Every structure is written in C-alpha cells, then in structure tokens.
Length: 365
Ligand code: G6P
Image (tube, rainbow, N blue to C red; front, side):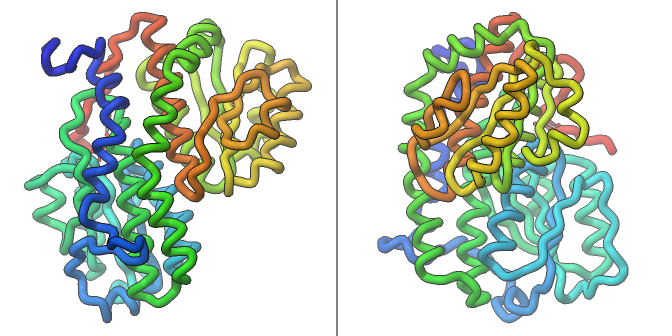
C-alpha cells in the first residue's frame, strides 16, 4: 500500500501530483507539430459529424462537471447546440432528430450505472453515441458506437482529480477536431486552444510547486462552517467541481455557484465564517466576478481569489496564483483547489482516499 502511494500520504495526493505526466499522456501523439490539428482516432463518419445539430452530454459527479466545461468549448467552437444532463435525469427528447444528435457519455470508470442506462436510452432512440473514458475494456467502450480515451492511468482515490483534468484536456482536443470537421473553428482559435492544452502540464506543475502556500491557507480556513465557490463561464464548472472535492473528502458544506447567481439566494448564507473562493482566471469575465467579490466582502466573508492577473490580488484576502495559459486556465485553477480541499481534509484527519458513504464507481441506479 505504502509503495503504491509512491511516498505520498494518500493516493489522492499522489494522483494530484501525477497530473503533469497524465496530461502529457492524454495529448501525446494527438496534436500535430504546428499545433494546428488533432488526431483522435474518431471512427464516426465525418459526414455524420458534419450533420449533427445537437450534442447531448450525459455524465455523473466529476464527469458531469467535465461535461459542463466541454459544453462551453463545443458551443463556442464547434457550432453545435449542446445540452449537459446528469445521467440519472436523462430521457431522449422526442422532438429531436436522432440522426442529427450525438450523445457523448463522459465516465471515468466506464461502469457508472446511471450513465450506462442513459446511454442505452439514447441508443434505443436511434442516436449515435461516443464515450469519453479512462478505462480500456469497460462496459461503456463496448456499448458506445465509438470511444475516445483520456489516458490518465489508474485512479485509486475515490475523489477524482487527474481524471478530471485529463477529461477536460481531451474534450478540448475533441472540440478542435469537431470544429475542424465542421469547418466552424478558425485556425487562430484552434491553435490557441491547442497551444493552451500543450502548456497545461507545465502550468499545472507551476501550481503544484505552490503546494506549501496552499496548504497554509487551507489550514488557516479549516475551521470554517461552509465554503462557497463562484465563477463564470468555464469558471462555473470548476467552481462546482472544486466544491464537490471539498465536500467529498472533508465532509464540510461546500457549494459552487455561477458568480452572478450568488445574489439570488446564497448570499443570505454568507458570513465572516464562510470563505468564498472566486475563480478569477482569464476568459471567465473576472471583472464581473470582482463585483460579486465586493458583495461578499462587505458581508465580512474572507475571499480567496484564483487568478493569473496580479491586478485582482488587491480585491481579495489571499490569492492562489495561476500561470497565464489562455483558455485552459480554469482547469489549472482547479488543481490549486484540489490541493486546498486535500489539505483541509488532511487537517481534519479524514479518510481521504475512501470517504464515508462514497464509492469510486457506482454500479447501481
Ligand atoms: C462516483 C465517484 C465520483 C465520480 C462519479 C462518476 O460518484 O465517487 O468521483 O465522479 O462516480 O463516475 P464516472 O466513473 O462515471 O466518471
């Protein structure tokens, strides 16, 4: 067991640190030399991919958050309508043309019962299906029409970490691929996305190098009642995912919100004992989120900003610095917040790799 953890106290911490190599594996051989095109080995016919009018993403838990992130990218660059549904809530909308619908099942394990059941419903309705998974030979790979692997390597910690960032990196490649097949992405946007993906391993490493500072902040906030995470655009799924991470392993109450939604309810819960974590990365409209930061600060809440822009630091109490890396910045911010969650849970001596009541793969509906 100790050997399996490679010298780390928990698998989760080991897996957080494995993210740079996991990301390198996810992108290896898939981006051409000039970072202008992608080879993902997708077998679905190009003519079909060109005719798709809607992508329905189905997933649970962390994979659902990767799906929300994917939707931001696909809608912008692949000129397609995207819906993201919690798999257990999915029903194929009868008004849709199954021939023009692609159902994308995102599942790390490839075995989640709710996701498999939604996939089967989509197939029965006549839609084509694509799986995004980490697990070779898993049920989803046998049942979906085609599969793209995220190649993160085995993940033992119940709380997903490296598989989330690998899912996001891989759906970014998928976005560029679909954008090019559908002739909807500019060369400039494709190369911006692909360079950002290529920069991911290094950017994540720079965040990991700040572990000690993040640990000290986590220890300082470990006694708080409740934590709120806010973000816009791709910062929103990252807020949801970061809150889920903290909830899963620390058993603290944590919620993620679209930053603008805070004032429509959650603000009533904000006090000096509820830290607010604000995603202020590039391309997530940080200037607007700073207005929400002001709202919570005036109620006495301490604010942690996650940002690559030094101009935001004076608006918050603590900053987790993210290196500038374009459209992938929010997922890099997520890595800082994985460490934050880990060190809060560690401070409380929780069962980090096997949180109470949770399982790595849930095979019942
Ligand atoms: C369980 C795990 C989560 C995971 C979710 C979906 O709840 O504890 O970490 O995100 O299942 O799993 P999947 O394998 O489908 O991505």
